[in-house]
Length: 174
Image (cartoon, rainbow, N blue to C red; front, top):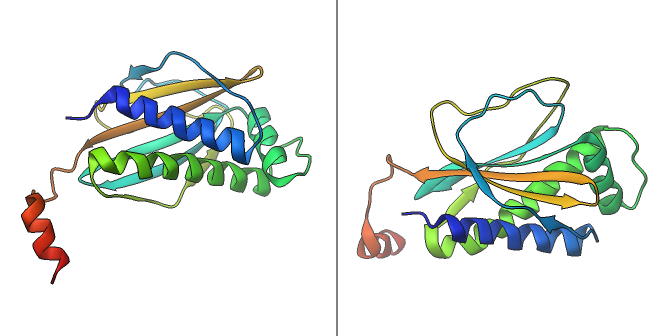
């Protein structure tokens, strides 16, 4: 069983670390909540990363174009007033750092996890959702007046055989 409070705590710690050390930005966390595939139109930038292992799922970072430009400006020590390729690359890297940092801590509880390459989606008036009725944990944070939402959906990998510790040790020594 997944401990949702540990997942939220891990996402907060990873986000705090990346925002403070890599972006030199202070954040304030809002109350985390769960959602099941809400259909909402957005003009945000979304960076999506897949997770795979004993648990599978998706994590995403969602923010406005203005916040994306702010993060890219901080990260790259240059001024960005509108979204371009460098801003999208910076948001992909921020997502990679946050979810990568989260993954490292979460592996203690969830077992080994792999991450996909980030995919960044940006446009006007679009919806992004997963099929099914999976539960997403949302960790909102604010940086000044800007909102960033860190989202994650994890479920047990039903296609992975359950080997147990002895089976894993046996495979490791092959």
